[in-house]
Amino acid sequence: PRTCAQVGFDLRAPEGLVEELRSRHGFEPSVRTAWLCEGLMEYHPQGFAERLFRALRAARAPGAAPHELFVAVLGDQWHEFLRAEHGQRPVRMAWQTCL
Image (cartoon, rainbow, N blue to C red; front, side, top):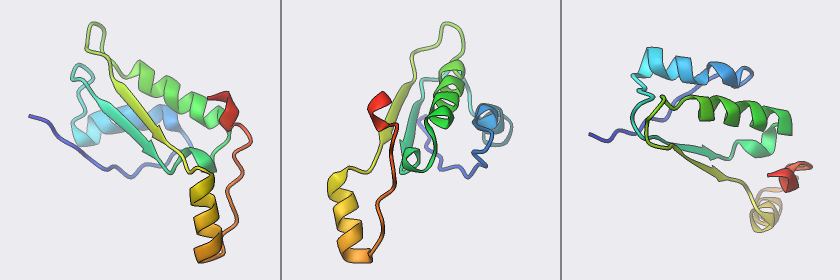
């Protein structure tokens, strides 16, 4: 059966995410998994993204089906909307061209 979970986690140490999912939420590395990182990357430096992606890539059990990774980031239209509607300053994404 397919399941979906939204999990709160302290991302100062993204390397611990997979073990947290295994121990507290029943994550099984041999099951094909879709990871969604939404509204997350804009607020962290490039090194964080590299560490997180490395941890997710390592989460797959040997011989298991590939996992899917989806990353959603705010584009210029969203930045303009947030500025116009809510007076928010855009998030600086200095490293976005490195993805």
